[in-house]
Image 1 (tube, rainbow, N blue to C red):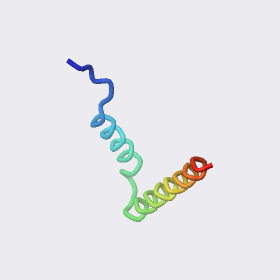
Image 2: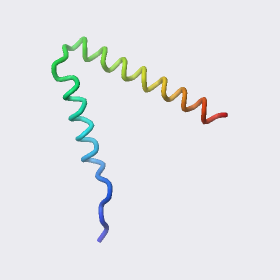
Image 3: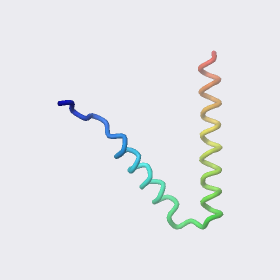
Image 4: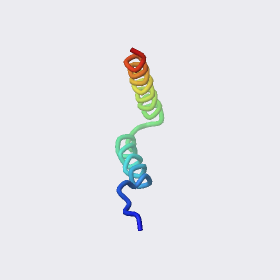
Length: 55
């Protein structure tokens, strides 16, 4: 029998819980701003990674 060293579902649930804790007291407009900022951060990180990968 295989020993499970990584649990994808547990990781997803921990991430969802962290996001819930960060956003639970926010209004809808605050949540939209939160997700816009996070999306912008991700796009920036992806562009930087692409630039360094191509060099």
